[in-house]
Length: 270
Image (tube, rainbow, N blue to C red; front, side, top):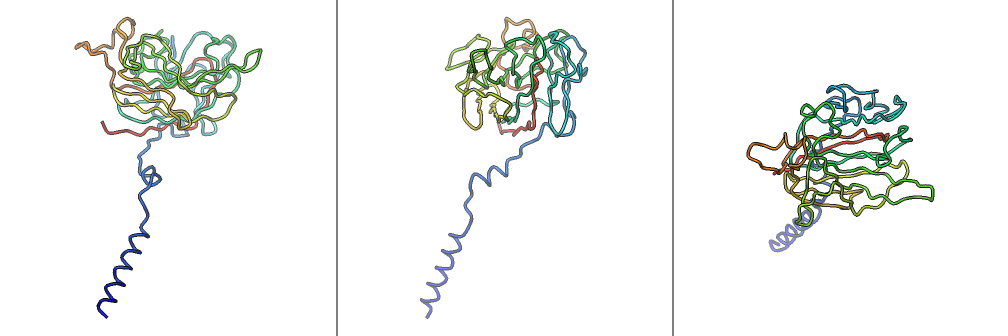
């Protein structure tokens, strides 16, 4: 009798173990503490800087929130006049994942630069908005390009997305310091006004990784100041260390109407 009871207890214990839910990726993902940088209501926590304008001057109401979207709008512009703009988040970050959902919509403002057609950017490890000079075009930063495909007279022209550009900076690619201003990713081309999800994984002054719709398309290391650049020269610390291990996050206004419906960050441990 005792033997039968022991067998029954063992069987019940085994069934209980098997019925326990496994710890899967969905549970781990739900436990991640993603912080919403854009609240869907207003520009709280963000500051504007346009070339030629004082800090905080939202030129032509270009950056705005409508219908729950953060919009870069040019409907108050008659013609492009060279006033590049940037919208800075208030805090600096070092180790993180940044996830953004965006789309290009509408037509480029009249006389906008050809290269700026359906062009925006995530400016990472950037200088502060306060430190930008009055007539400075772009913050010294690592730019993760957001690009839409172009429609030429002969059809569609391929254009990779989530490339990297380096205003006032340099990066290391495959172990070699590169001073080339922009480097292309391995992504497909995105045409039209569809929403695109991009993610950048940043590890301080070490590694950057770019993802488009979950697919890694580019990686590089050692973001650093370019000592040849007049604006970067003023940001290099006294010890001469060129590596940039943290900085601001900003988005651009450079003649292409753009919508953002999500800008969120997951802070990583160092």
